Image (cartoon, rainbow, N blue to C red; front, side, top):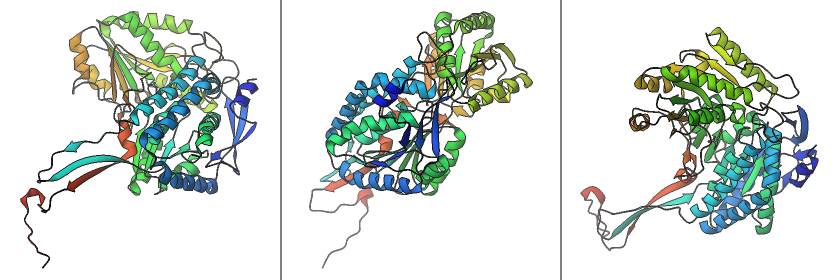
Length: 507
Ligand code: UN1
């Protein structure tokens, strides 16, 4: 099934896992990519060893010397062509994302659209890598800053956004003059191989192989080697807080830079004046979309006491109508989790919630069919329950009640993660309190919009254990460049700053 789609994307039954300036022969072990809706294999990828890693990084390092000298708008033109190639392959690549991750087709296509949006954004950016000019205190001196390319950038991505997050990083890095070394999740190697094939169609035409490279392999081999590699000045990584903490320590140990987008434990507060219809729709998409496997997924719902019972009754009624099934089929809103382990983790969280005093209002079980399907789940809970403080990558929503806005904001902020947050209210004062310095402590704070589904134009990322990184829009590009402060003396005197005098003569 779907072999024609795989074939059009250049996927064979057995694929090499590394691309430097050509596909490299990899020794394995074999990674079998499984369709999580059926449990059946899609195709196999051979993982890279240190030897192919070395070839990839050497190629990215060598190509960087050339790529950084190409004027930024010309680099933007290459990214524009990649955007065109992605447009041509949107339907197939979107379907492959769905087949490999289990997210519904509309979201699979949305992810490819996010890549295309990133290409468009990076094209414009390639003419806007602005530096500032500042007045020098010294006569006949000019002071300014400029942004220089950084080097090969390591991009480590997670299974849940297997291609969009690569684009967040790779499009900016390339426009900024960096080359890219991509280590995708071993759970989604085929989408990475497909993207490399699409990108290669553009690179072939310009003899620019080595700008975008690929190295599929385990975290302990490829991930760890990247983290330790002094030739790679920036590692941008998406994944769990535990992974990020380990990686950041290794990268910091060599004084490299890391850009981290780690776990979230995102909350929505619904106040008594909220538009309930709007809130119900937003909560459902944020909690059930992508089967709760976004880092921005809604996990904690804080309902004002006066509306809680009615809200939960209506939410349960909506959950009952959510169509679960093969994610490529029309009208399906909930596909499978990504793996058997994800199902086990979800069921363990539901059991833990029960032991800690939670009450299942809806769902809580595995669905009896092939693949890794679970019911969307609502659990009546309390903030203090330890399981509520953990991120479980599954469609579990913990519903809590509150009376006082100050108190609930404090509860909302009491978890370790700080990615996305939202308030639903029609009162300006409540909305502004949520956005004030005493409000949400997250990298993303929304009003009357759910926690997930951010646009690429804003900087994406979060605080605390989420890792502090910012990707995609706004001035996130600065992470991919090095800032250089320059002072030019166009006079014939040598005045010193701060009025220091140091008179010497050469005679
Ligand atoms: C992620 O889950 O790692 O805001 C990224 C969103 C998406 C990105 C999620 N645009 O939900």
